Image 1: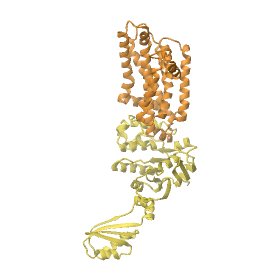
Image 2: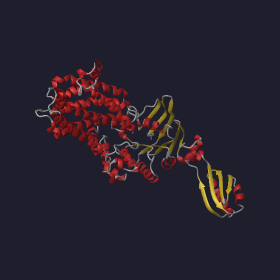
Image 3: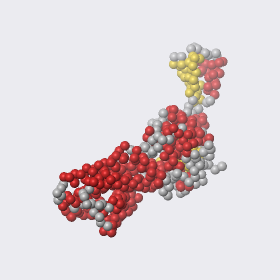
Image 4: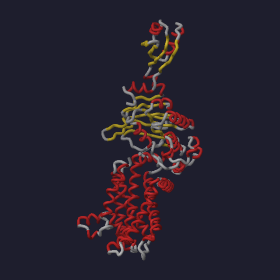
Length: 249
Length: 305
């Protein structure tokens, strides 16, 4: 069924790394962002108010991680629409390479790149983390992969509605970034007006942020099963919807 | 021997548009068969039905004895499909594409290095796809279509956008495919391509197949007109030319005569007349009709309009 998946995944990683903006944009930029934000939060904001302190402790890493996940999904949307525009998703059906294989390979590539970026970010920015924090790196990486995997399904929904590859990036950004604003990352959800609170409750980023912040602060997985379940539901619902509305050509 | 491809009365509509209308034809083993017609005539839809990518609304198709829609996986192992241009990752290397494609098939008969060599791509094996010329890209697509040693090869508009030299090189490759006993099914809107390459062609317009035969027989059937153009200063020439029974008109412009008539014997008759009357000529050319003229005659318009 998925013959060629691993070979294709490996090729796609190599192809991506050959792109001048590929490695730089998706790996170097988040790492730099993290370092700069981390320094800023550490040096300028002491003595911290309780809110700022919580933002500098968990906010920066979570924000940057969410951005990594979103940029991965946006590039997924772009790639899918380019492939569709070139007719490759349709024509490929005449070969034993299944379109599902291509799509799966791209999700896997994005997950691998997300994990790699995150690890690099920690290596580069470790000393800017406030002292006394021992973030559970491995669990946090897993949490981010679950997040990326879940919103990649939204990426497929977006890919179904973008008319051409040129609009993929902007339309995706317009849909995804506002969700981050309501996710509780900047303003706690309890402080939002009731209408926005209701919206935030159905947005996947709300659960992603809660999961990532919790894991970062040392919570066990047990206390975040709801968040993981919510992200899984998002994935299942969006995948089921995409299966109905996705355009192969 | 049963035909390799058998299409009987297929019809395919998109909404109210009829893309293919009662098309029927057969393709025999070892021949190069061309489906020719203008863009939007239904060529690609027909080809996609045969490849199992689309299901016709009506009618039946059999390829290598298989139903292409129901047995598409079985069929894919035995056919090769050329991908249209610009469909590989920009920065994939030639050898990576070939290697990936080769890994997709159960049977592995073809030596990929030798295949690259045959297609003149050995030197380019480490080049990125985006850095290949148009002709090299098409040769790569042909390589990918041949990688499973297929029995039938499908080529869709394969020289569109290539310069004449690259086009000729591709034609040689297609003839080479046939030499190895494979059947080739191609579509083109280039009449000279069809004429030089195809053993038989089917002319399709508005989803209907208007006629089908070898290019030579199509020309003979629909366009018996022949034209001879010659230069002479012999003052009695006009009179002599008009006396040839097969000649319909002999028009003179300065020293140049344009002689029109019907049938293959017109040229012989004109030469005979020249020698019999000792008419000295300084130029002599014949203009034979081609598939382009056949198309014009059958449809009333030029193919590129």
